[in-house]
Amino acid sequence: MAESVLSFFELPLLTQEKILKYLPYSELSRIRIVSKRMHHLCSGILNRSYYLLEPFIQELQRSIKSKLPRRESERHKHPLSYKFDTISSLDSRIQWLKLTFNSAIGNGLCCFYPGKLLDEIYIVIRHLQLQQICPNPRSILQEVRDMSSMAIEHFREHIEPKLQQTKLMPLTNSLGVNSSFSLFSTPTSTSVSSLRHQLAPQLRKHHTMLKSSNALLREQINVLRKSVQQQNMLICSKNYQLGLCRRLLQYRTRSVLKQSYRIKRLEKNLVQTNHILNETRQKFDQFLVLYNSNRDNSNSREDNDTTANNNDNNDNEQEKNSITLKHKNDDDDNDDKTDEIIYCSTDEQEERRNCFTMTKNNRKRQKL
Amino acid sequence: MAHKIRLQSSDGDTFDVDVEIAKQSATIKTMLEDLGMEDEDDVIPLPNVNSAIMKRVITWCTHHKDDPTPPEDDENREKNTNDISSWDQDFLKVDQGTLFELILAANYLDIKGLLDVTCKTVANMIKGKTPEEIRRTFNIKNDFTPQEEEQIKKENEWCEEK
Image 1: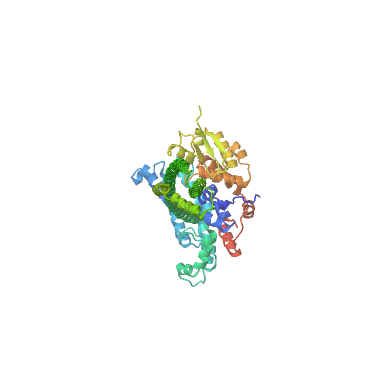
Image 2: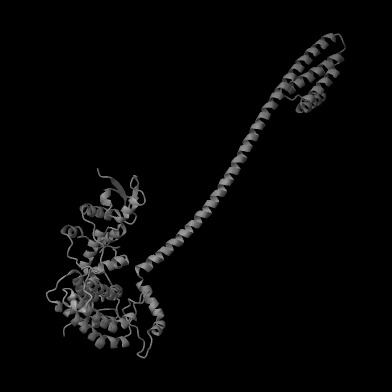
């Protein structure tokens, strides 16, 4: 046999009943003994079919009566009169069965176990519904009469007394109608309801043991519903987190945009500053050229002057060189004076163009 | 010109089936007509049926495509399990697990003819067997106490000739 083969009782409950309904009631009564679950199923079908007898017969009686003449004298001559007599006899038999079995069945002490009798009654009903004539009307109900008498006698002699004594595990369902086993603790118990209350834990235990497909399905549905609710809550929280992340992303994107815009502005400022610096350097170069040319002119005029002028010239040349060197970003540490000038030049070069212009004017004054 | 639809089993396999054959399943018929899936090329998912069972169901439906609509079940109908056709009998010569899977598939897909014939087959497996044979066939455990068994045996003696 395969490892995970479906079993008969794992099929849906309605399907299990559908399969069993293809069997005669006598078979159902016979196979009750297979297991408690099979007993529960078969008892349910037997009891339901037993309870359906009365409305069936009454409906049939009404329909047959409607086809017969209303006058009693004419009714006896009608061909369908045998049907009316049969159904009336059948009805009285059913009432007798009710008197005998209904109490025990209603209290869940046993089921309607005479399956063969049920088969026979339904055969008679089918005959009355479908057949129009009958060669021997008296024989139709003979089997039903005999069987019903046997069933009632047997029940009264053998079963009913023992129902008072036998202590059996119950097989009650939620309706309490289709139960099949009796449950007695003492012969002096007066009401079955008190007995049921005493043995409620055992009843509950058996109910959980049996567990119809509907109960299983309901449990599965509840479990699935809970997991769906949990999933929904998880989805809600994830959606919220997603919203937060989206807002954060938008904020960060805006910040990045602002930063990039700021960088562009700074780059633009830098370009402008470099441009200004270049212009300043050009002007300074021009000044140097002018200064040097002026210096040369003054040197040529003062050639005949004393060496002090030459020293000054040297100093100036040095100064000029230092300035030139400084312009070339070289340091000349020969003279303190030069260093000072360099220092001044450096300081002023670090300032803006206005400061440098002032320095240029100072130098012109010195030269003169 | 047969209009085909695609059915997808739980394993992910798809099967192209004629619409008229597929409509033997009331479940698929409802999906096509009431949910408006008839004109689309969408795949109809059937998550409760695996590929092996789907193939068998399609085979059965293809063979029975010209069958008349089966009548509704009557509470007082005659219980007859001898009217299974020879083709169906050969078709249902499978192991018990496959037979029950076919019952589940026929129940889910709501194919009355297949459900009837499979249930009749199982009923025939029960009919005539002793309780012990039935327990062996379906791997059912006898959970009665000796007293309970005795009571049932006593009840069933009502029609025994002495």
